[in-house]
Image (cartoon, rainbow over all chains, first blue to last red; front, side, top):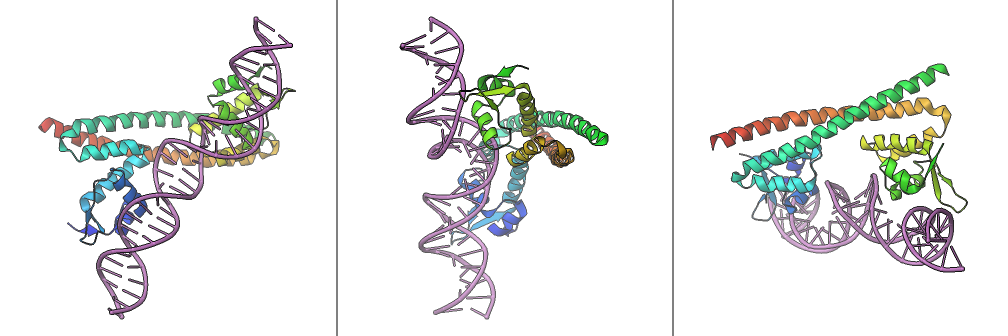
Length: 121
Length: 121
DNA sequence: GCTTGACCTGGAGCGCGCTCCAGGTTGAAT
DNA sequence: ATTCAACCTGGAGCGCGCTCCAGGTCAAGC
């Protein structure tokens, strides 16, 4: 089970070093292990957590919910709550996709109209 | 061709009065007609512009591009540029949808795993 | 032992997209 | 004529999610 410096963790997770510290401060990420001198030592488990957090962020989950999810993951007896949280966000994502689809339709219409304009001129 | 007070325009467009003023200041919306006393008088054409702007915003188009689109719409000889701008954003939206779909898949996996956990306990 | 670059902390700053505020004006209703 | 809600302007403030900075510490390589 190897370890990673902050720079490596940043590179692999896609978050900046500052963001990694920020997430830890905010309680999104559990406190990371340290060297005797105080430097952070990220483990594989941290990286896989970060990987999933990255995914949640990319899907638009706000920081506050991310924190909630992070907290829940530190208590093994909260699987049901985690499921609920993810289902909630899944519904939000579904809604957003529906909206984007209707946007696409509307823009296609507008583009078709513009294209007719261009032909006529 | 009826007209609308700022409050009515806000209600119908879904933007706040402050946002309407902001969009005008920023050149996203063309200068709105005024009464002799200086109050804004929105027209149907303003409302339909706002309706499309609302749609673009909801699809995540940033303010800067909105401004560009607004400017282009004030010059009738810019249909090709408008088409280009919309196509560009359409590509961004497509990318976002693809990402959301892959997010959904990943979360479904995680949920299935959590559900197995719940059954076992 | 010294250098050097990566890291540490607490706190300030930033970019976006509004949102609110103070202080003043307008105009429809009474 | 008076009231009063809705409106005006310029500019400050805010919430989010980071990002940057100053001033200091650590540790690997020479």
